[in-house]
Length: 320
Image (cartoon, rainbow, N blue to C red; front, top):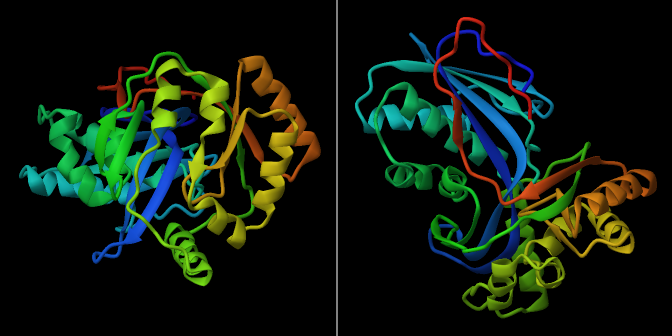
C-alpha cells in the first residue's frame, strides 16, 4: 500500500475473492437468485484505515481507485455507520481506502472494503466482537461481505451469505486477467443470465454445490480442481463483453489447468500448477493478448485482518 497512516487508527488488509463454482438457481421473490457457490480468497489486497473523526468521510486512492464512490453510497462507509448504529457508538470515523482489488471485476472489491471497515471500526471502538458476531451486519450489506470477514475457501448458499468452510490443505496458483477498459455491473450480468435462460427455455433447478469440486479441494489437486470449475454467469458475462471469450481461449491454449470468469466478471482466473507456470502464463498472456492487467496470486488466504492497530511515532506504509 502506498499511503502511510497519518494519525492513530486501525489498518485492515482484506483480499479479493474468486468463485471456483457459481451455480445460479431460480429468481427469488426478494429479487435475488438462489445460489450455491464456492468462494476462494486470493492474495490481491485492499487496505482500509479507520481513524477517529468528528465527521464521517471516506477517501479512496490506489491502483484501482477510479470509479469508487466517496459519498454515502460507498459500501465501506455504510458498513462503518451500520456498526456504529447497531452498538450505540457516538463517534464518527474517517475511512481511507487504498484500492488494489479490481473494481466491478467480479472479485468483490466493494464487499471486501465493507468487511474491512467492519473489522477496522470494531477494533477502533474496542467493541470486542468476534467475526461471527459481525456476520449479521455483514450479510445485510451484501452477499459476499460475510465471507470476506473470514476468507479461506467456503461454500456459500442462500444468496451467498450462508457459509460452510471447506477443509483443504495447500495452495492454488492463479493468473488473473483484469480488464483495463471495462467493468461489468453485477445486476446487468444476472439480468442477462435470466434473459439467455428464458430465450433457451431452460429449466432452472435449485442449485447444489459440486461434490467433485469439494473432493478436489480437500487435496488441492490442481488438475482435478481445474476440471470442475463452473460459473453459470460466464455465458452472460461473455455475451455482454465478448472479449472474454478470446481471453479464456488464450489462457487455455497457453496451458492453464482451468479457466473461469470470476463471479459476474470481467476478471478471468486461470489455474496453474506452480509459481513458475504462473510466470510463464503471465508472459504468454501479455504477449498474446487481449490487452489487460495480468496479475499472479495464490489462494486461499485469510480474510480481513488488522495489520496495524495504533500508528507509531513514525508511521510505516504498507505494500501488497
